[in-house]
Each structure stands twice: as C-alpha cells, then as structure tokens.
Image (cartoon, rainbow, N blue to C red; front, side, top):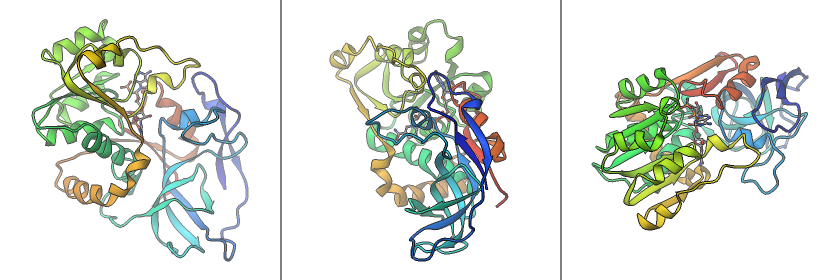
Amino acid sequence: NKQVILKDYVSGFPKETDMYMTKSSIELQVPKGSNGVLLKNLYLSCDPYMRPRMTNIKGSYVESFKPGMPISGYGVAKVLDSENPEFKKGDLVWGMTGWEEYSLVTAPHLFKIQHTDVPLSYYTGILGMPGMTAYAGFYEVCSPKQGECVFISAASGAVGQLVGQFAKLLGCYVVGSAGSKDKIDLLKNKFGFDEAFNYREEPDLNEALKRYFPEGIDIYFENVGGKMLDAVLLNMKIHGRIAVCGMISQYNLDRPEGVHNLMYLVTKRVRMEGFLVRDYYHLYPKFLEMIIPHIKEGKIVYVEDMAEGLESAPAALIGLFSGQNVGKQVVAVAPE
Ligand code: NDP
C-alpha cells in the first residue's frame, strides 16, 4: 500500500520534501464486527485547509496531521469490503480518506455517490466539499440579489469558479481576480465573468477595484485576505456583505498580516461573516438537486487540474500556495 507521509510539522511555505512516499502492507479485509470500510482510493483532493493541518496548532477547527502518518483529506473511493451497515462492497463514495492506495476507515464520514453519469472526480470539487462551500457561502451567507455587483478573489479555483457562475445565473455583475493570464482568460471566456484582472500585475489594488466597480461592491467573496481585503474594504457599498470563506495569503505566514481598513465596516454598514462548509451539509441533497441538471445542461462548467499518480500528490498540494493549479486540483490515484 503506497502512502504519502508527513515528515514533520511545517513552518513557512510547504515543500515537496515535507512529505515522502512509503510502502506498507495492508490486509485487504475489514476486521469482523469493526464497523469499518476498506476503500480503494480513486481520486484525492488537494485543498488549502490542509496547510494549517501541517502545523501543530492547538485549538484549530481542524485536527493537525500526525508526523510519520499518512496525510488525510477528501477523496473519491470504491468500497472493497465493509462491516458497516451503511456501505457495501462496490459502492462508490466520497469523503475523508487517506493519501494512500487503500484505506481502512474505522469511523467513516462518507457520502454514497448516487449520480455516476458525471465525472467521478467531480466529487472532489463541484459535487463535493468545494461545491458545497460555494453554494452555502454564496446563497446562505451573501444574501445575494439580482443585479448586484459581486467580486471574488482566487476566482478561478475550486470554489471561486462556482461562486462566479452562481452569481451570473442570478443576474449579477461579476468580477474575479486571479494570478495568471490563463486564469483571467478562463474567467472571462469559460466561466462567463463580466470582468477579471490579474492581481499580480496591478500596482494598486484599490485603483483596480475602482476601475471595475465605479459604484462600489455589494458582495465580496473572500478567499485570499491580506492586501486584497484591505483594498476591498475601501470599495464596499453601503450595506454590502463580505463572506469570509478563507484567507489563503495568510496560511504560510508565522504572523498574519494586519488589516487596516476595518473601520469601513462601520461607516458603510457592511456585514462581514465567516463560515465553515461543515455547518451546511444538511443542504447537500438540495444542492445536488440544483447542480446536477445545471451540469448536464452545460449551464455550469467546471475546470479541473488533474495530477497523475499518488507520487504527484505532494507537488500538487504545495502548488496551491503558488497558484500553479488551474481550476480544482485533483490527484488521480487509480483507474475507476
Ligand atoms: P483554489 O482552487 O482557489 O486554489 C488556491 C488558489 O489560491 C491558488 O490557485 C492561487 O490562485 C490562490 N493563492 C495562493 N496563494 C495566494 C496568495 N498569497 N495571494 C492570493 N492568492 C493566492 O482553492 P479553493 O477554491 O479550494 O479554496 C479557496 C479558498 O476557500 C481558500 O481560502 C480556502 O481555505 C477556502 N475554503 C474555505 C472553506 C470553508 O468552509 N470556509 C471550504 C473550502 C475552501 P491565483 O493564481 O489566483 O493566485
């Protein structure tokens, strides 16, 4: 059983060498009466929240990885054996699994995959945790209305590309920021954003936002934090909303940057609200009902960045923090 192991806790930018491959043996059978399931992993998901898990922080909302143990994360898998009444051999599932070929999961947090006429890898992205994040964050936290002006950072990624498309479906004016020309092309030509800009090429983010939002921003979907948040605060409309999904620009810093313009929350009466997708999984069936027809009719598209083989997983994961991924970063581990 090939596995990806975390070598030690990480500080600063993660490196490929913070992880290593190993091979161990595994009994391809679940111990009788154990409630566990044995999974053959097909696709693994690389997600930004995995970076804080590489650090030994007490009291975080996610548990730290254990040095010397396989990395864990979301994935799509096939059930090979089960002692759990909810799952049977042959079921396709998504949820928490290990960065390895086979995983014995003793307390399964898994969803059974019902719709198999869409790419299975989508259950790491649009039909999985990032999709639910975009759905809950936009519809439940942003209180969006037709015609509003919406800004999304890290807009071409797993979550952002969907938020933008949801906002377009509702009839909003949508602008995204991302870190390369290819990503800007995708935003405008594939996902249908009204405008997009490369934040790396803007000497003054405040000026850039004023250019695209002369009247101000109603909704900011926050994925990056730092300087972008400060610039956005200067450009919010009265009664605007900021949904704080994440702040990836801060995840590798030992001390987070300060935010200077928070007083604008008061003067512009802006509601800024953080959220975690885990509080919204009760909406998953409703979300699937909405999104599956949209995918089949081509009203929503999804771009994935597929790395091949478990060996490519460490590089794929750290690539999230330099923006190497174009779309949702997935690792294909085994053929379906
Ligand atoms: P992405 O697919 O968007 O990948 C991460 C992207 O972030 C990179 O491609 C890069 O794009 C951008 N990025 C990396 N470093 C920086 C930086 N220093 N400054 C600005 N941009 C940077 O990731 P996801 O869509 O999966 O996640 C987006 C956000 O949502 C993250 O903050 C994540 O933590 C959060 N999240 C929160 C959840 C919740 O429950 N609240 C659940 C899931 C995700 P670029 O080239 O554009 O710079």
